[in-house]
Amino acid sequence: MRAAPLIQRLAVLGLCCLLCSVAQAQEPVLRVCVDAVAYPPYTTPQHDGWAQKLAERSALKLGLQLRFYSAPINRCRAMLQAGQIDALNGVAYVAQNRKLLQFPWAGEAEVPARAIAVVSFGVYRKRGTVAGWNGQAFEHLTTPVLVNSGLVAVTDRLQQMRVAYDDGARDTESNLRKLHIGRAEVAVLLDLAAQEQIHAQGLSAEVERMAQPYARQNMYFAFSSAYYAQHRQLAEQFWFALDAEMAQADFRREILDLP
Image (cartoon, rainbow, N blue to C red; front, side):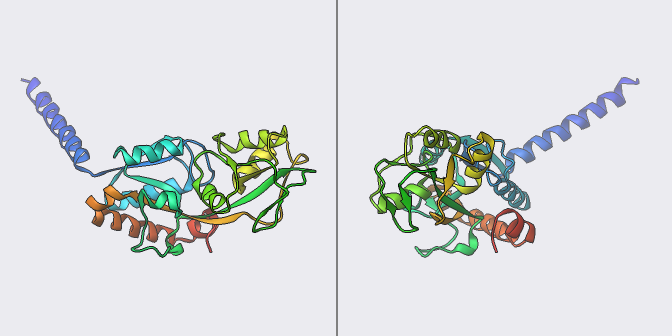
């Protein structure tokens, strides 16, 4: 006789679990890829960068499941083309990305106000090296410029200037090491990552940043063109949710380096 209430409770519990599973299965899933190389504080392979948290907060508002993948950025692009992921988090509006991605505006004119971050890149060299950068062009350069693999925000401009570059190394740490041992004269690196690695490796007396910045680059959350064509309304809602989150002062000023 006592077994009946227990069986009833188990049945109710089982039904609740089933309903929860069904509800989760019905929630739209957004698959997002980020570079396996950490670019703190914006993105990390552990998915705890501020740009990733910004996306998570926006997805929560829309009832979306956000599923992050970490891979070398070139593989992220290949996964995007194969339909294995839906979006990239933190990409520049440059030629190579425009071929694959839909950015949060219509037409060709960039809308910086919808950037999720503005990052700065600097030109770094071993102290005593003659090669330099005057803000517009490289001077006395005899070796390829070092760049992190897949960093089209940098290589797009180098290609326009017809400057040879070496993007064989995946991360800032490796390129700074190449500079230190004289494998190249200069490297173009994300300033935040470069400064962190220079300090970590004790290279402050060996490596210097040129006075003129290489570029300040707007970074965006962008959908694959195929995903956007199929889910345009959802993509637009997600971008509006991002805008709302970006309006908060903590993200705009303290975290994402925006005015």
